[in-house]
Image (cartoon, rainbow, N blue to C red; front, side, top):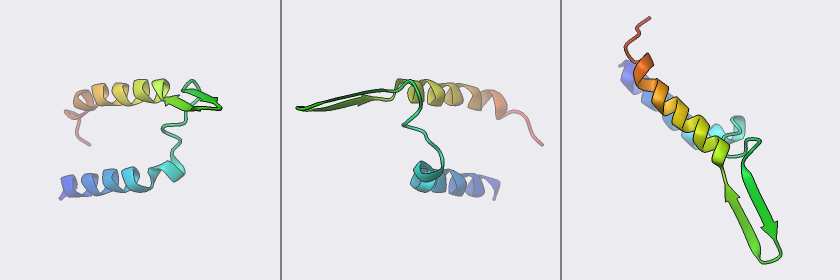
Length: 64
């Protein structure tokens, strides 16, 4: 039951999280715009997400 709740919350954050969480538009992300097009590389967002992925298994063993 708990895993279903966690999946539901994660799914809702993925669907609607862009409105509330600024992931993908953090300070330090590279955004270059020119007359021929634009380039966007979310380097800081990648670092934050990768750190969260690394810490997730470490915290999975703790129970409340």
